[in-house]
Image (tube, rainbow, N blue to C red; front, side, top):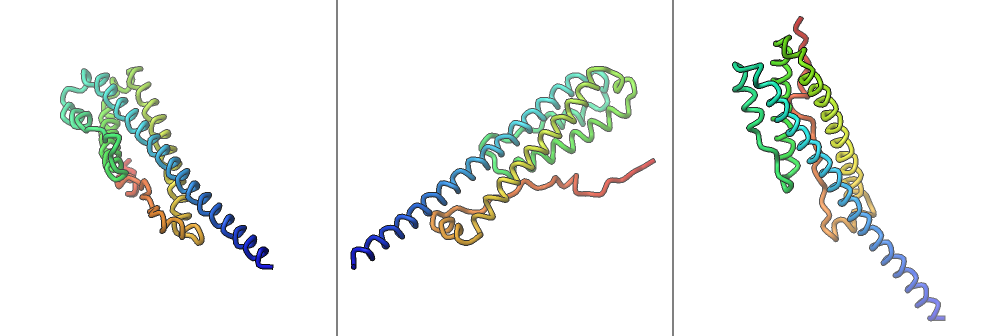
Length: 184
């Protein structure tokens, strides 16, 4: 009769062992997805930086007296691959401010705005911004799912045991949190 208890205990141990392995692998898979989506943000930020550089080159001949603003925008360094999500967020905020300043300058110069190269660059800017927003949404979605698993029972047992910690979200830029002012 004791053989049935041993077999039952072995089956329970195998189920628990399988659950631990499955949950640990699930956490590792989620971390890979988070890293992948963070890489997408890096790619979008790099594309955005490259676009600003090209926009500066295309417009600097037209706007001599606005050169200080443009030079400041281009002087911003892009965050390195190992930068934290907060550093990437700060970089994103700085570039957004620069893009807004550059768009205001372009709107002030009708001749420049009529230039086909600048119009194309503005279109590409919008596309890059949309890609960046999509990358941020994917990243935050992956982080949300992972963070839920870290804090929800029973997966939080494995998370605490294996020291899987919650990740930070990529938050909205301060500039974009303020109310839009219409000045007619």
